Length: 308
Picture 1 (cartoon, rainbow, N blue to C red):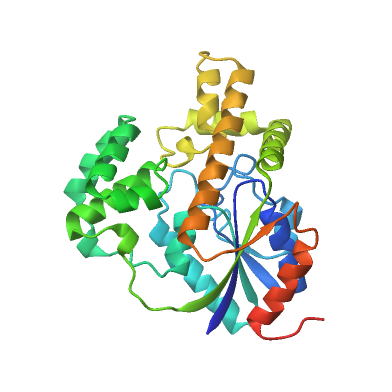
Picture 2: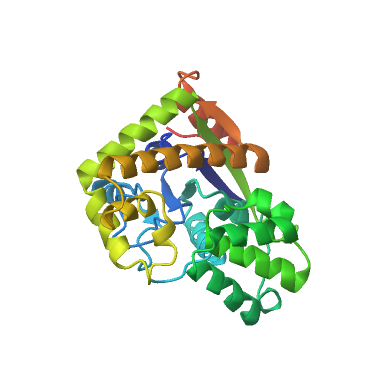
C-alpha cells in the first residue's frame, strides 16, 4: 500500500521546517495541506516557504491558482491523491504538510465528497447570497441546526465549507462528515507537533510581527482591493483583520492585535480538531528534546526500510 507521511498541528509550531528536513532526509516531496497556499501572490499572510525553500525541495499544490478562482476541498482531495500516486510510482516519499483539518481529513479518511447527487444549484445559490451579504453567522446557525455533526467537524469560519456542508445535508440527508466510502487507499503516518501554549502563542505573535516586516500590509491591501472577486482569500486570517485599517476605521496596532488574537484562536481550534478527529502521533517540541530523532526513527519503521 502507498505510504504517506503527514505533518499536522497548530499554526507556527514548525510544521514546514520539519517537512523540509524530512523531505531532504527521506528523498521526499512536499504536498501542501493548506487551503490558502494554493493562491499565487499570497505568500506572506499564508506563511509559504521561501522561494529558496521551494526550490530546495519540490512542493506541490502551492501557487496553483489565482485568488479569484474557486478551490474546493474536493479539488484538493483529487489533486493530492494524484500527486501522491505519482510520487509513489517514482519511489518518492509523499509528505503532506499543513494545518487545514478538513482538507487533510478528506484525503486521509477518503471522504466521499459527492458529485452530481450532492449538488443543487438552487440551494447553493441561496446560500451564496447569504455569504455575499456577509451573513457568516446565519450560515453557521443553519449548519448547527441541520447538521450538528458537521458543525463540530468542519472549519465554521470558512463560508464555502459551510455552504458545501449545508448543500450535502439538504440534498442527501447525510452529513458531509459521514461521507466516507470505507475503502482505505493509502497508509498514513500522522506526525503532530505541539508546544506549551504560552510558547506557541509567543511564536505566533512574533511571526505576525515578522510578516509585517516582510510586507504583509501590501499583500493585505491587494486582497482588500480585490475582495469582491477573492471569495476565499478575503476571509483569510492576516488579511480580513486589516480591512478596518484600510477603511480608516481602526488604527494599525489595533488591527495587528486582532491578527495575533485570531491566529491564536485558530491554533487552538486546529489542535482540538486534529486531537479529536485523527489518529495522530503527537510530539511536544519543548518537552521532547529529541523529538526529531524519534520522528525519523518512526518514519523508518513506518516505511519499512532503512535510511543512511
